[in-house]
Length: 461
Image (tube, rainbow, N blue to C red; front, side, top):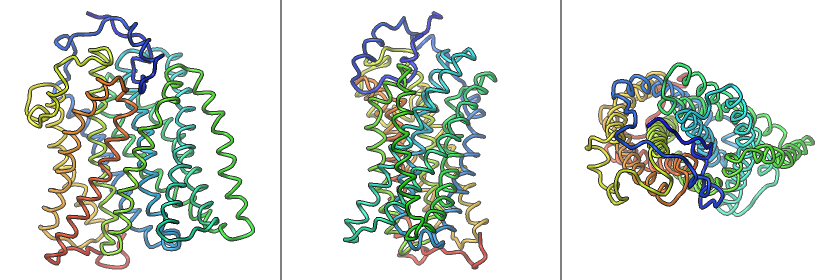
């Protein structure tokens, strides 16, 4: 059977309980049976995913080192609310890029980006969509940070609030535009080279996303912080008002295409839920930083690796479902099958094989990344720390991959698009889980006098 679904909506754009989307899905052509679906070899999967995974890890190491260094800078010292904003903003921006990469990967694998005209149209409407999403989610993330900080401290300052909101919105829109263009290029080039974009797009998004966003946030935040409380403070208010006024324009452009219009209407709940979950990780990080300042350098790596690997798995499972079944119908058994850890890691099915490979990849990957952090940062360490770190990191990846196999099928069964809804929830759960496990690791090591890891000299980094 060679006939494939031709609707763009079949390529990762059907969102929660959309009547229009469901109606179009019911009119799709026939799907490939599982036994006729092309099964990618383990060797091909490893070769295609290993380099992007290591590149993503390098970006996460850079993000961790930058965050550790920036913690002593004036922006973070005078505005500690920034520590809460960082995980929320990085998580939100990462979700936008990863869901974009997942949607485009599915469309590419289903032959919906074959011509230059299709690629141009898809690129334009999706860039407009990500700009609209970036403005809204960055505003909500900053506002959430301001409100929660005000509740905790019992007071609020408009100058601080305007600085955080303006910094968050300008950072998000710039990063979203840059990374969106890169994602389009990656998908198009990988398709021309016959490389499965599911294996490389999300790791590259992770590689560039966090480091780019954090770097821009520090630069823009430092600039806006210098304006806060001065006669130029009006500029901060003008910045976020202009962005709020421009958002409807981007939304209007993205609504011109039916696929992005549906995402625009129904795709907010997973991103906003992810923001709340990721903010929980931010609160844990803020508290942990008081006793364990060096935790900041490891946190982006633990969270990033787990989120990266589970995003690859989610994208692959989603593509497979779109190729083999109509949304709402599971092609390979009832939903209860996917509650089993044995089925997740020990069966011969394609996604189980991929889960084993991804779990095994996390071990040498984390060893490389933590060694790089220790050597570059000049941080004291012990064998006990390495072992405890690996246990926490691998446990996080195992839990996420196990949860992924069930969540994707649950969403599919409920007619919720997993491309746009699953990755935000999975990566934010990874942020919360990773930060919590890392904090527990430092607390446990502290009992044996192995915690409080600090740079060995003031010139480190």
